[in-house]
Length: 141
Image (cartoon, rainbow, N blue to C red; front, side):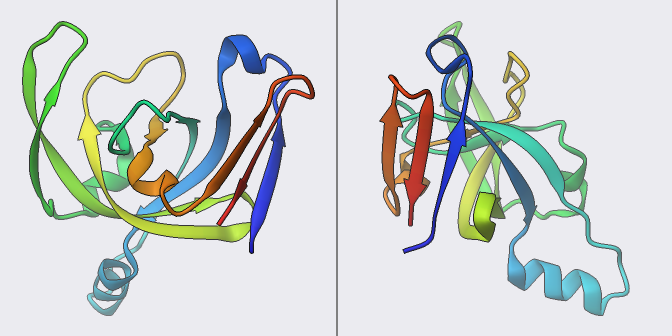
């Protein structure tokens, strides 16, 4: 079972943060390459969020420009307004090269240096250990 462990000095205040790479889903990556287009990814800071039913990413990420939306979904904002956002098929690469493909919602309002939230749609494939006393998080897939 592939896994990774991340040490976070300020785990209690910063939250469970992990560096991930967001890329086009493999089928789209193949299509872009066969069309002679350059394929690029974004290295981002993600927060593991067990309260989020779905994973989201900042809509301003450069790699999104090469993607075609897989659909739309309505998202409630912190101000209680509902915003229609695009969903994209994305490959999320975690430390230790663990890859999960999922539809991720592009939202306009992530803050605090976080560009992605890893929600329960991805967490359902993993075992998450939050070790507060040692300031560690471990995910196994």
